[in-house]
Length: 399
Image (cartoon, rainbow, N blue to C red; front, side):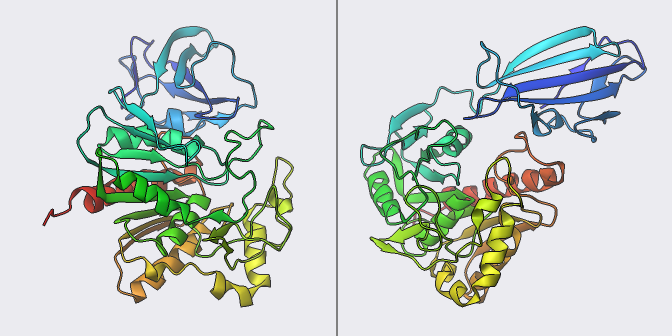
């Protein structure tokens, strides 16, 4: 990607402002802005020119996008969800130029079909055709619904996979109404064994290679895919982004504090690590980062950690891990290291990337909004994740 502004007064200052709706879900406008100084030919090139000041500080054409922050403003009417509006202003804030871009993951018209009535909200996305392709089942995190899958699926479909969005619970926030009322509203005793049903349905489709079905989960979705893959065979690649090494307590509708886990297996609640008053870390008025109830819960219940530990050594297939050392949601860096250590001790193929400055928002391509300190981690992690799936789902000897 390249962004250049030409025809400027040589060595003059300009400000570039970019705005877009939040990628999915919340009705809020995101914005980035930076001041640049044109060169002696009146050109600003974001690939080589660092801002003089602004929401990002290095030469990076993606900086216009990843440095966007929530303005708190509602999205004006007439703004398409994938539309990015860019304005170029002079030093007096007069408009010099403007452009509207449409953010698209694929230049092809992708084909979407439902996974089946048994899986509310689940969908299958691919390029046109009926040739059997490898598939990636995508599970989001505590946001619930299909938001994460809707954002990720076109990216993987464009890369030659069948992308399968699998919502597994649907809370009533932020709108007050669950997106998929048929799904559990609370994060309580969610069924890991449902992924076996997903696998079987995908194996029955002629447009999917049933021997090449991978899993990708982010945050609570990473906890889900690791716990499920340790019990269910048939997934030759498992990617866990900002993962957990244990099953945690549940929350939300139907939960009683300290009594129920987030996940179950064949109707049986799984052993879990309780939080220490998770309510302190929730909502816009949170008293502490969400990582605090997690860390304090683990410290307060050392006797429950081993029983709640996900037996990642039971996953025979390759596993990819991406964690951050400054994760304020939960300590994904520490937990990824524990997972990698357990698998290494068992002699199992594991690729683990843990970035000391990375936060919780490490998943996805480098254009998505994230903390400045997480940008190198997200960029490297995205490349590594692509290479992992290429190696494990595409470069398979048919013999």
